[in-house]
Image 1 (spheres, rainbow, N blue to C red):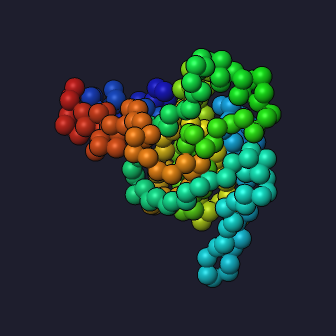
Image 2: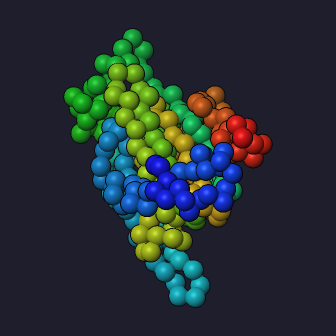
Length: 233
């Protein structure tokens, strides 16, 4: 976006003035509350839960009960629970888990059956043969991106922010992510992110596919490095 008042910036060197942009403060990032209950990617679910403040002590939040919605309706019962911490200012992913395809079955036909023809029949979902994640963010602010990479499915993208339980103002959210849907996240603040997640299968390193994950090793975006070193000035 062009700078509306160049005269204001004439104290900068010309190269810096040419690189200036102005933020559009009217833009508002999509947040979990606005996508809750929607299914822009088949199988993905963002669901609300309650966070109870304990005055002068902290907060208490339930994650989920396998015999209550939404997990009971999905027929999804995680067999392993884990926690993870992502330091402030860092990112994870993209990574993806391989979807199960029955032997002799065309992947596109299989996904069409699961998510179009018989989308309401949760009993045919092979949770015990592929890893689904159920994520909860306990602390921090998270930017989450999901991309459907399953064969024959539209390459839909979901991009939104999730407040941790310590920021949610009494509201928390869980996110269900199917196998075959790549996902990445980054801390949206300097605060560490703490998450708890359940999986439909136990951890298997061979089922951890990485996609465009070099961000995890990158210290600075190339644009920042160019600016710091004065490239183009």
